[in-house]
Length: 98
Image (cartoon, rainbow, N blue to C red; front, side):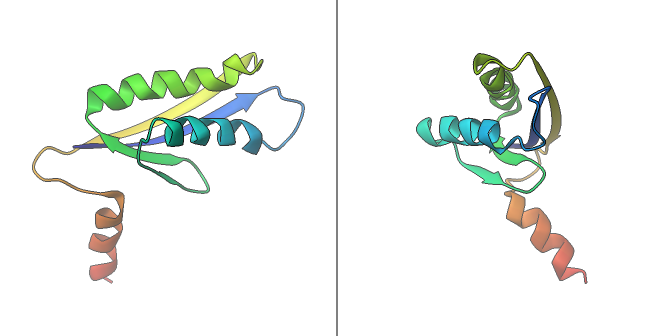
């Protein structure tokens, strides 16, 4: 199972806040019943690497569909194949070592 952190930044909106555009992305994930974890700096989604990369392309296009003419997307992909792992498992592993 892979884990992807996705940050999508609409550029040139004329405002410093991008939360309305991120809300549209979250609405899409909820509508499709895709489990995710929203953080202050991005959104974490788990699945197969192929599905996650396809999803990243779809989500990248959402602000474009709302009239934004430039979107900057950062994708971090952790494709671990030796065991199943959720985002909280990675955090717990670090906390246990403190």
